[in-house]
Each structure stands twice: as C-alpha cells, then as structure tokens.
Image (cartoon, rainbow over all chains, first blue to last red; front, side):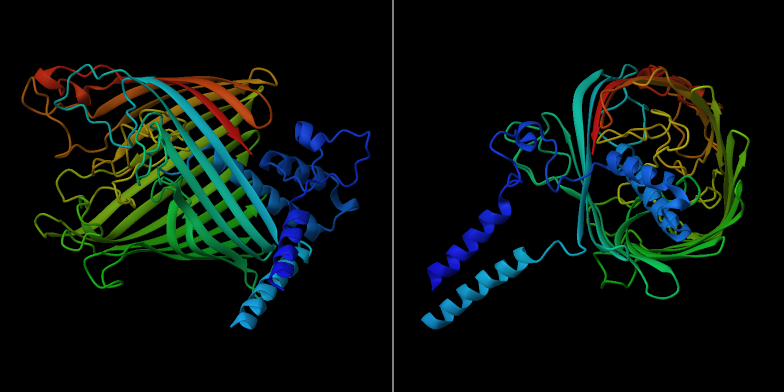
Length: 92
Length: 460
C-alpha cells in the first residue's frame, strides 16, 4: 500500500515536471530546450507584458467595452510602475 | 499503527494527486526582477548610504574603485483581479565584501554563503466587494504626493485604502513606522496617518490636497533598537499640502506646497517648541525633438536655533535616511535614483540636519538612435538656513558665511542591447561651494567630488 502511494506520488511528479515535448514529432526540433523559445507555459517579461497590453488597448472599442479598456489601462499603468520601480530606486 | 501509516501515505499521495491534477484555476503567479551592476571609480561613493561630510578629513578623499550589484525580485500571487499577494525582495552586494555571514549587503566575498535577502514589501492587495475600495494590507511601499520629499518610497507596515468616485480619488492610510523595543508593544510607537485626495478637473489638469500626521513619541530611553542613535526629537507633525499637475502643450508642470505645524520636544534639553515649517517645489518637463527637457526647483525651510521647529520635518527611517531624487536626476548633490548599496549624497534628507534646502536643476534626455540614449543635467544646492550642523572653517576658526553647497554637472550615455538589457556610462562632478571652504584637515578645502560608473541592467 505504501509502495503504491509512493509510486503514485513519483508518477505525478514526473508527469508534471516533463517539458512540453508531447506534441513534437520525431523530426521536429525542440526549440524550448534548444533556444528557450516556444516553451509551453513560458512567462512574459514585464516588457513583453507592457507591449501586449498596449497592443490590446490599441484594438479599442471594436473589441473591448469601455470598462474593459479601463481595466487594461489600469494593468498597463501597474506594469509600467513596476518596471520603473525595478529600474530605479529600491530603497537602501 | 501500521494501518494509520498506510492511511497517511495514501492521504499524502491523494493530496499530491489532487493538487497537481487541478488545472491552474485562476491563480496567476507573476515573477519579475532586475539585476543591476555598477563598476565605480570615484572619490565620493564608498559603498554606504550616508551624508557627505568632509569636515576634518584629508582634503584628498581616496579614489575607490569597486563593483557592486543589486538584485530585485518581485513575486505576486494573484487569485484574481480582486485579490493578490505582492512581495518584493532585494540582495545588495559589493564584490569581495564578506562571506558566511548573516547581514545585508554582504556575501560578495569568496564563499559567499550569506543570509542577505532583504524584504522590501509583503502585503495583500485586494478590492472590497462593495464601494470600489482597494485595500493594501501589510509591509508596502508608499510615498507622498510631493516627489517623496516628506516620505521616500520605502516599505512601511500598515493599511491603505483608496477609492475613486468619478473624477475624485481618495486615499486614507495608517502606518506603524517603529515600535519601541524597550516598552510594551504599542505603548509608544511612531505612527503615520495619511489622507490624500486628487481631483481631475479635465484631461490636462489635476489638483490635489493632503493631510499627513506623524506622531513620534520615541525618546532616547525608548529608542526602537538598542545601540541605534536617536538624533531626531519627539514630535507630532501635522502636514497640509496642495499640489497640481497641468499639461500645457508639450509640457507637463507639477507644483506643490506643504505647510507643517505641531509640537516638538528637543531631545537634549526637553524644551517644547511649536513647529512652523514649509516646503514647495516646481517641476517641468517638455518634449523637445527626440528628447525631453526638464527643470526643477525645491525649497524646504531650515532652522537656525529653534530646535529644528522651523525646519521642514520629513519622515526619517532607522538610520537617518536618504531621500531618493526622482525628479532631477542628480547623482551627488542628491541621492541617485539608480543607487544600490552605494547611495551617498550631499543632501541626504530634505530636512538636511534642520538646515533645509534650496535646490534647482535643468537637464535634457534624448535618444540618439533606436539603441543609443544620452542625457545631461546641471543642478545647484544651498542650505536654506545655517545652524549648528554647519562645519567650521578650520583655517579661520569660524563658520563660512556662504550657504552654497555646490553645483553638479552630470552626463550619461547608454546602449540598449535588447528590450531587457541596457549598459550605460555615467559621470558626475560637483564644484563644491564655499559652505565647505577650509573644512578639511589643516584648514584646507576638500577636493571636488566626482563619480564615474559603468552600469549594466537586466530587467525581466
């Protein structure tokens, strides 16, 4: 029973720590491992997040409601403030 | 017993299974940070954050050449748009400085292995389900609406509530700055209450008002940390402020005025004083060709001999504090906005040892190409009022009549390696004013300070 439990844990850990290679064919390169590109679940840098937010805000009212644009603008301000804080200041 | 062990094992396995099998739900983990390295050649910076004081020292300050690095790490756990945990950490190290230790700014020596992670912020940021109120709860960065001349953006423990009603934005907060280690907790703490309001008149004009109340009953006997010098008096300071930001064509103007009243008790004599002090500032920025031209002026009242009660009172932190200069881009006269472990300055706080400040600056920043940027600034500073903090001219045996601290000229040129990485070469030089004439050893005048650095920044 104990072994089953441990196997269960190990199996899950292995399954969740595998890189995103499942969709690759045998002839495709794994760009994630090779050059840190096209990784599954990759996180955006703060600069990339700012660019994405700017891109979405530019789409304007044809795509987003006024309330949603306001929300995106607030997120853009938050991201810009964060970048500013990272680059400058930071206490003693 | 065996059954119990099995049950625990199965329960643990199932917990892991459930935890890993649940899709990512709404929880969003966000991780950002920066690495900033600076190599110095300077006769001014020395790896400390202190106020420049050449009195009695050799006129020729030694040339320091060293490297320091700062790492910033920010992690936020976002349950949804209405509930987040925000944290902010940093590690400062001068290369070669200390190892196998448990102190901030060490760990740059061989072996490293030092407990040197500093927590700058750790707080909850959430929206109340009613009233559109945002609450920040915990150790959080907060600064005043006046370029940080009253409170620099440092981490403070407290609670801050803010809301927006149409064009009116309101913020109310309470912070516990220090709680004495020598009295029962909460009996004589230093607290700050803040109330800020701003009203957007139209797209180009915002006006604001503030009330800040600083209650500092901590005496030498109840100082918050054993061994920490207590140099500021006990006081209750009420600060009233007005500010306005206006956009006129390509220019943005920001002006503000602060008045302070309250009571102060001198530490040495126990003498009671009524506070009456003020400060005002004006900043201007305008687009010019590919760049931005900027100017700033700041006045903060000083005190000659009234126990500091006429000097603009600012909120100082545990070790005296330095207020970062975000408005004029000085490097030596005021604390460099890109300071790391090194953050020495001629004006360390706007209170400036009760001498106050008269300060002005002008500058220009521009992009020379898509990759290359540059900037230059000039600034001057005086103390508003001379007092006991002014050094003696050791040649004459009396204090100089001049209150002129100096004129700074600085410039920088940088290159963007990519969206995340920049490298820049920076230089600053201060022509010292006659405030410092003859204050060095043997009545000599200290050499003019300079600071050059190569800065590499990676942010993500």
